[in-house]
Image 1 (tube, helix red, strand yellow):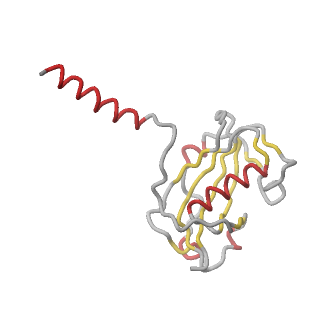
Image 2 (spheres, rainbow, N blue to C red):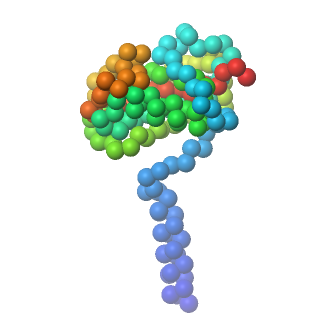
Image 3 (cartoon, helix red, strand yellow):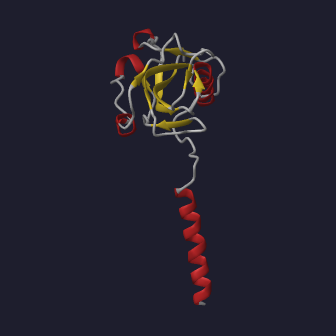
Length: 165
């Protein structure tokens, strides 16, 4: 009887702990129907009044990403979640993270909100943000460029928005 209890406990413990160290996490935030028509903005003043913010996130890029690699990864992630507009904030080098794959960290919100009325700024993910290195210019000149390459991983602020609904 004790062997059965021991093995049952071992199986349960193994199952629970395997979830703790899993390298992938399932997105559990707000989403909309997928889209392939996602646009990007680098200035909050350009966000239309009918846009709702539904995901605050930071993207950790893989090492040796080009501006084109970053654009494609961000737009794919945004489109999969239903964002038809992405506001991209600042970027920092993340030299300690030698990533071979892109990673997205989400920080809410609990509900979609009207961006122009409620946006409070880049007030999420500061533990990770503060551990990074120097600011990196990832703007309209570098975004989508195959000629620009970033040797180190970057940490990029972003907000996913759904507009026109």
